[in-house]
Length: 71
Image 1 (cartoon, rainbow, N blue to C red):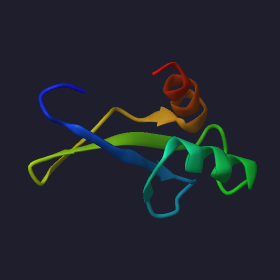
Image 2: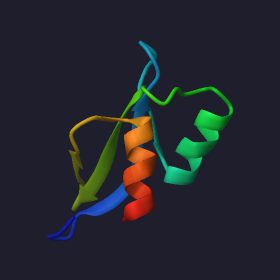
Image 3: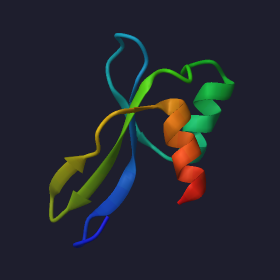
């Protein structure tokens, strides 16, 4: 992301549980492997700049991991 926004990590939600994160892409992989998250759970990228936060549109954890591998 341009204009000084810094990626802080992934925010995620498993079912109706409270939001978790921010976590790294590697941690998302670990949460999937340990079955604490499912591939179809939702996640958002969190960015910060000058004390402000910005979030991406939600995607599934599977899409997030696949996309992160291409970045």
